[in-house]
Length: 274
Image 1: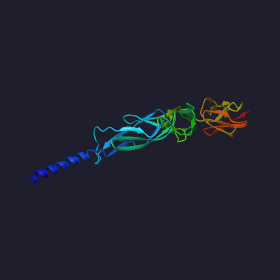
Image 2 (image 1 turned 180 degrees about the vertical axis):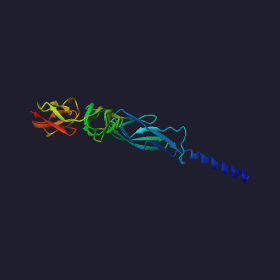
Image 3 (image 1 turned 135 degrees about the horizontal axis):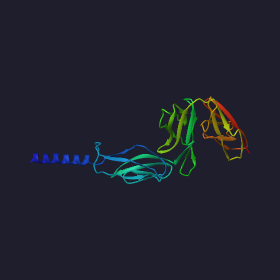
């Protein structure tokens, strides 16, 4: 009799241990931190319900919720960005919960200028790209893209968007923030540059108006090489600034020198702003 009672007690203990070990003890969410670039874009979270020994519990599906309306937490762990800000997404199964922080960055487009670039000069010639990152309201932001070259054997690009020639050929320079991107198609032509000219030599404009300056390079043989990319600078950005595509914008009345450099050769023009 005593032996039978002992067997029953052992069996009960085993069943209790099995039942206890099968209870959910924690939830493991992956990834541990989420950043979503762009409204209405989504990222999926995965969650594993674990017992107290850290073993996954099969057929245990948690429910999902968000701490605020920055994101929408959907069934299956899909998280959709609704507005810029921070939130916490929670997975719940029974009495067990786990959370991960989520941040939404409002970025819609990356506009890169010029969209096509002819990089002419000896190897090592460098020209910067300009860019504007806009949010969902088409307002400019101070976000900076990460730059890559599809063919770095033709041209490389620095973290500031400066393109440097290596050898003749074509490549695409891409600026990326999350999975939002813009690009510039680059053609590299390796050849010597003897001098450069900028036109018009003198331009007149009003505050808020734009003026495009064109650069022509000349080889040692004196033959013109039109539509080349160069480094543009304004002597007084408060009067007029100029982008990488050679488009100057009047800011206030005054005079500014528009200076251009390519492969060590320089030229300048004058922009009068009324």
